[in-house]
Amino acid sequence: MTQNATRARRQRRFGSSPQIHIPHSSWTRPERAPETATPVKPDEFWSRLGL
Image (cartoon, rainbow, N blue to C red; front, side, top):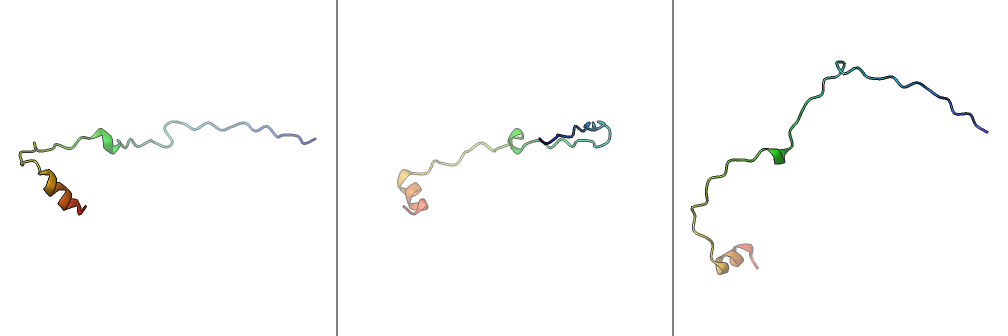
């Protein structure tokens, strides 16, 4: 049989490596201008897509 060596784990100190908080991009909502443009007609919509 093999014998597993038991090692004590070293615990990190909290002050040794400061964690940097990076917010996710979905948390910041960009300010959008209200859409005042006229809606696109269905025929023009499909022609812009090239379908």
